[in-house]
Image (cartoon, rainbow, N blue to C red; front, side):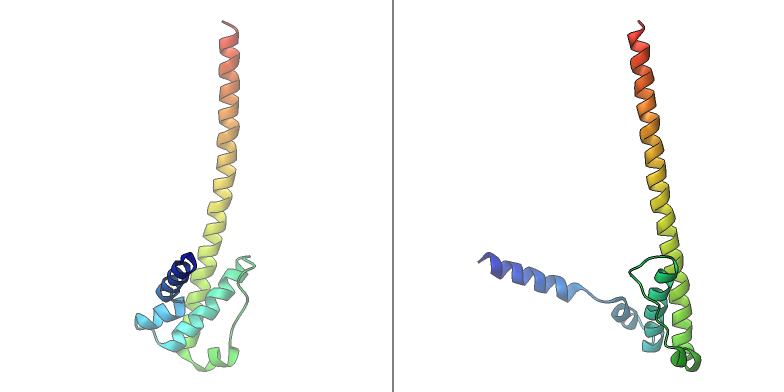
Length: 118
């Protein structure tokens, strides 16, 4: 019986998932734009240093189809920027959390010293 429910749960999850490409088409974007956006986004993430994305650009299509070109350019810029900003947030969070821990440790040590002298 548990396998039955697990199968139903997975099926429900899969039917609720849509790719970004499908979502763009559903929201009225032309397929060529959505194709370009997906390729540009992957390329933008890769350019920002994320090893998950790969550089994809259909150059003949980019040169011939204005919608693909626009989608690629938009996807590249947006995803490169989003990845770069995420990297910066991750760095700041790590750096500032480390500084906060050091400060708290120093404060606790100084408080302990102050109480020992009394």
